[in-house]
Amino acid sequence: MMNEKLTTYLNELFAPYDGIKSVGELKADLLSDLQERFRELKAEGKDDETAFAMTIDSIGDIEETVEEIANLSQSLERQVRINLRAMNLNESDFAGVALHKGKFKASALRGANFVGADLTGCSFATSDVREGNFDGANLTDCSFYATDLANASFHQSVLVRTDVNVSSLKGAKFIDTRLTDAELAKSDLRTATFENCTFHGVDFKYCDLRGIRFDEQIFSGVRFDRSTLKDVSFRGATLKNVSFRLPISVTNKSYNDFKTVCFDGAMMDKLTYAALKGLWVVDLSNVKVI
Amino acid sequence: MSKHKISSDLLRGHTDTMILRLLSEADRYGYEMVKLIAERSGGEYELKEATMYSSVRRLEADGDIEWYWGDESQGGRRKYFRITEKGRVTYASNKSNWEYAKRVLDTLL
Image (tube, rainbow over all chains, first blue to last red; front, side, top):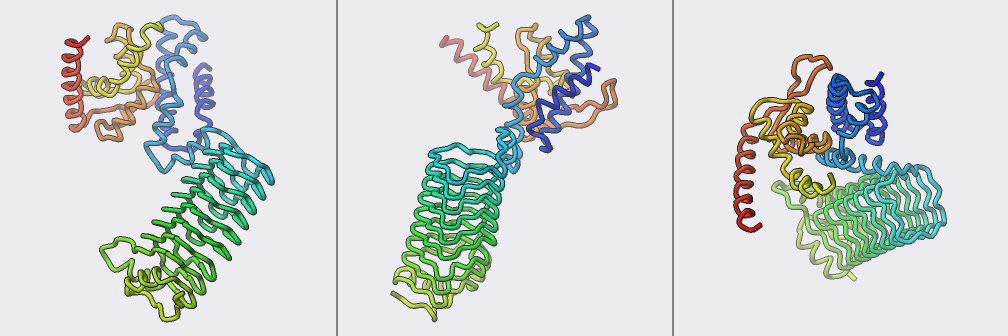
């Protein structure tokens, strides 16, 4: 009966971390130790309540330990932090709100609605915002660092100095979006859509951009350095001062990948043109230099 | 109790080395280590389960210790920890660092 009480106590203590293997193992180890301590205290003649209290007291600061252990296996970090705050805001409605410097850090915000919201300076770092809707939202100075934004929508949103580094943007939609000095370095943009966007001073360094269509869109001061650009298309796009340093690779892979980039009908300044020409591999015969 | 708080923090900083010491003597399971620390310190230092396991997991990740399932006991199977060769080296180095710090502090304090 007291064993059940111990189990129940641990179950409640560990509930926020359910499903994380390394933490589940800690819970099992702890339970076995606590049961033994409890048995010994009882054998010494302590009553149930005293023995239980002393046993629980021997645990110490478990939250800190759980965080450390979960962080040892880094891939779980995002999941743990979300569970830690236990802020379940999935499907929440924040449409039209004005919230400056709000802390959504490490939250579960899947499918949340931020349509038309002014979110200047908010932090969504390490949150789960899959299928989030940011249409028409002002995301100036927001942080989406290491955030899961898969299939999120950014129709007519404004991204000024927005930090979207190391994030997942798989299948995200950027339509009529203005990106100025935004950073999207090291992010996964596979199957993301960009239509009618403008890119000023945007950083796409080390991104996975395979198969993305940037057709007819405007780029100035944009860095695509070291990104995977296989099958990317810039048909009819305007490029000024855009930088394309290839990924460092011991094989010809990055050159072969870059050969598949299409610039047909694009317009570019002399700087961008010269730099691309210097790479030798890309077909610039249908490019107009402006 | 509270006046010993600072010294308790100082002791906690050496948890890894304490555990390596215990495991350099014999393979042991979690509760056994907590109990031995309490006994050997004459009850002056109580190593909390949480502190012990965060140290154990860290040592595991660093390759200083490893674990295996022991035989069935009354509470079920116990998880035993044992020190690796790397762990013995770590222990010796931590120990000599401490001897050095102790010598210097003794001249300064």
